[in-house]
Amino acid sequence: MDFAQQQRESQNEAVDQIATGLGWFSIGLGLTEILAPGSLARFIGVSDDDGNRSLLRFYGIREVAAGVGILTQPRPAGWLWGRVAGDLLDLASLGNAMKSDRNEPSKLTAATTAVVGVTALDVYCARQLSNGHSQQAGVAEDSGVEVRKSVFINRPPEEVYRFWHNFQNLPRFMTYLESVQETGNGRSHWVANATGGRRVEWDAEITDDQPNSLLAWRSLEGSDIPNSGSVRFEAAPGNRGTYVKVEMRYDPPGGAVGAAIAKLFGTEPGQQIDHDLRLFKQIIETGEIVKSDASIHSGMHPAQPPAENEEVTR
Figure (cartoon, rainbow, N blue to C red):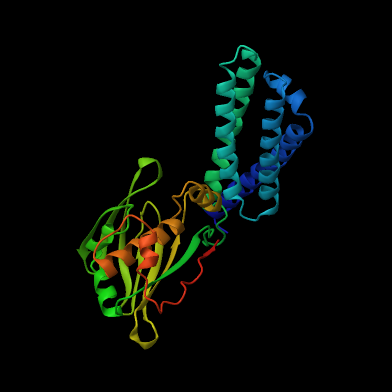
């Protein structure tokens, strides 16, 4: 074992110990919030009323769940990012409490300082875990999310494949895309809008291209959101249309919890793909995008089998 590997393993052990400590801290704080919300409210300088007690109990349940997740999961990066989200919520609540004359500013200031310190520790630990501190013998932590979606389109595979293969068509129905530019040799440059108005970019290359049947891709090194996947174009029985089946793997910021938060706000790629495939169906079948989802169903082929169920695995 070389010096660099020894140093890396020593750092990994330290981060694991911090994560374990944060897990127990989260459980202890959560139990206090659940069992003694009144005493805790007075300790941090907020009024001991029913509203604050109920809020602290709710926060306590969140803390206990995060602590159990950190202590029981071999890869708890997502739970640490969940703690970070909870810390931000705590800071917002404390800031709001500062505005009330019923509360004690000095105690609230001390509580806020403590939460800021814990937040910094949570962020540090979450980043170390997300950046692959658990790499052993060069194998990185797999925190990716896989999404599978499908849609039936009443057009032949040749037409559907041809439209999709022209990547400049993709922003017409992929609403998060700004542009896709082919750069040659099976490579392309993608620009998209992410959560919070953030702009993300990546380069991708085609890894498999079977005319009228399959397109597969993967993002190149340095991508803002690493991703890979494939689109299959399968003829329906009797040549009565095409099944379009999309499989994608991506690495969301914050791991599984980051993906769950994105899904809560309607920005998770699995939800986006489902929406985009509906728009794709409209363009191919009608030549335009109609505003009402009801028009999608009314225009379906009468012999269309039901679409496959969504599958999301982590």
